[in-house]
Length: 125
Image 1: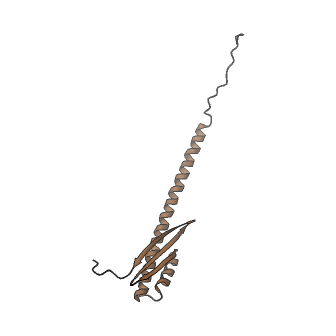
Image 2: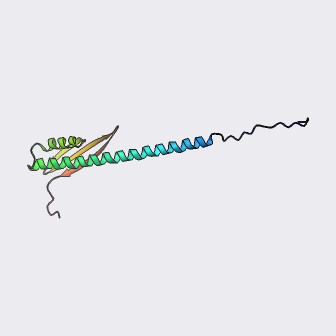
């Protein structure tokens, strides 16, 4: 430096590739959000399927119990639940009412629903 020649330091800013890293972070967040939305939608659909299967199975069992359909109430509920793509979890006859529980698999989890069917209550509007 005393001889009149100046040494230049290399220009190091340290932000090379920051845009690519930011783009990767934004893309990762978008993919994770999309997976969350798809998972919630799938769970909602499975829950609706389980509820529809439970309703149909309970009505079919109540029809069998009242004599409008042939067969045992729980046997008919099992057949209707299976035709709806669900598994019959429980079936109980209590007087003139039938209570059923169905389940629909969502990967390793299950969505379940319950329904009760029978004659209308006395004094119901």
